[in-house]
Image 1 (cartoon, rainbow, N blue to C red):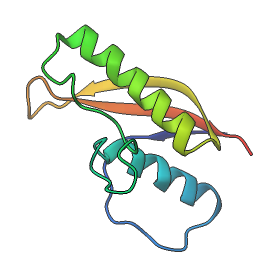
Image 2 (image 1 turned 180 degrees about the vertical axis):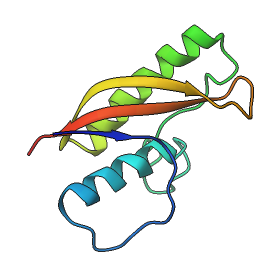
Image 3 (image 1 turned 45 degrees about the horizontal axis):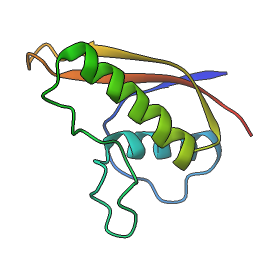
Amino acid sequence: MTFEVAPGLKKIEIGLEGVEEILQNVAVILTTPKGSVPLDREFGVSWMFVDSPTPRALAELRAEILSALERYEPRVRVLEISFTADAGKPGKVIPNVKLEIVT
């Protein structure tokens, strides 16, 4: 079974289990800037390339997402990462991660 996750959390729910827990973990990883977690500065996704040309920035973001999910949520396998433009903010893209759960 495949799932799609995009950054953005409504709220963090404590006590989730199974698929819901894994999908919440992925969303947390995607929305956490690397360097912002005091005891684990590697957690999250780097945004250091934000002013790079778009093709390069998207390639680097894709690599960051793959690396972070591989390290911090090994129960998922990324199938595809696509990007959606934010109509309200020119130049802003939102990553959409298609994945499957592997246990």
